[in-house]
Image 1 (cartoon, one colour):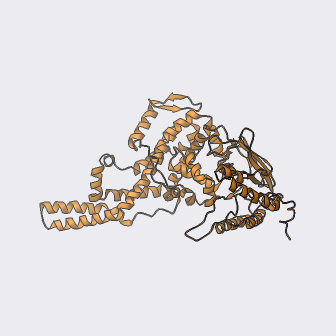
Image 2 (cartoon, one colour; image 1 turned 90 degrees about the vertical axis):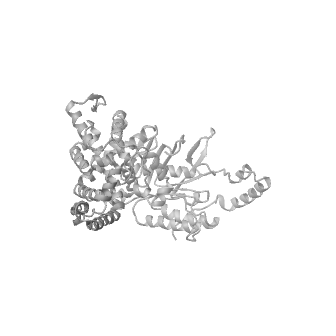
Image 3 (cartoon, helix red, strand yellow; image 1 turned 45 degrees about the vertical axis):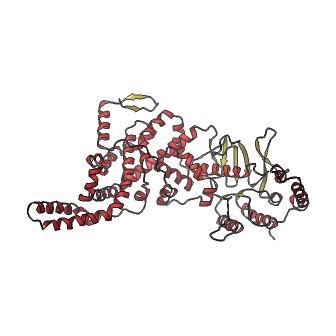
Length: 536
């Protein structure tokens, strides 16, 4: 027995006429596909955002440094290429949709309805080809003028075969010539037809699910009802004959002897060209719904999330924030008002992880509207990071030159005038200590004068140098060994003590300690830094 879902979440039997109509639609359309979850490349997932032409607000380095590939992999589990592309587009463009926030909230309150909708959308996961390029990219080419006459050489083949068998043996020459022409056409179009057929299959899954969702009586799928009938019509126009699907071996002979796949290619190309506007609308409706389903499924298993509040460009507040990729992460709180933050802490205590947690939460706030915290008020502005600059062996580029190049890119962003937020970890590691501190102080001051900057560094001398524009914060462990983030600068370093823990011996540790004491007298805690970075 078939059922329908009413708004309060209960299930009632559907009328006989509705059941019969649904059965007829399914009989005329595609069978239930096997679940595939094809592993798409990043370039395929990013194609929708590129085709629609929305500018990306996250550059490639920030995308990887904020661990967005790992985050999106977690977010898009059980999600087809359609939902993956929409989620990527939201992350890359950084524009949260209020309607999405409302729907995710409603889905979180209706798990039974979400489960039924997800079941109806399962065929989308059988799509193994992205179709945003043919739908949103350059216009599809018109079928060749001669494609309407493809039946003629097939007819000539059979006529010549008949003549050769019944009347004139010399007609076999005509048979061979016509057959050679058919094979040449088949060879020329074979790969194109094979690739296009995968696109058509993805479109068929799209239309099949559109029809299914249009038949559900739920507010989440109301927008699909209007196009339910048309989706079935287009699906049948794109679907091969049932015998071709049931007898693949026979269809192979049909392709080589009768150009079946070439004729279907041009026919389906014409259908997609004609119905492109509807297919675009259907794509976006289903991709948005699947993206919201993925967000609701992701958030349902998390107790620590909140809807973020918008804050001015130089203000930021996280209450009990966690990193979404870390199981059992310790909540940390951070408040900035006018000044950025200089983060200090012992080696391997988690400063870089803290920066990535802040960055990922800022990206989610802008793209989806939520943060992984008890409460959050954040600026909805572009984010840029500099955390993993490396040597380039191919280009002969040193670490320091790579860091300088990234610093120039960040300063160019800052000079553009648009508000931005910068996350920087251990700036200028690739040169000596004196020049590292000097260059870091100059660059960080140039950024933090005009924008919100959060930087972590072991060069503690930077804290008093930049105190006018960067508030000092320290990551440490409390008496129970739990991480905490509090105002202040690290007082007790552990770089020397780690020598002993790693078995370097008392001699090495003692020498290192004496050099450290000598250097600290001159540099670690300067008595007076005021005015060093002032304009002269």
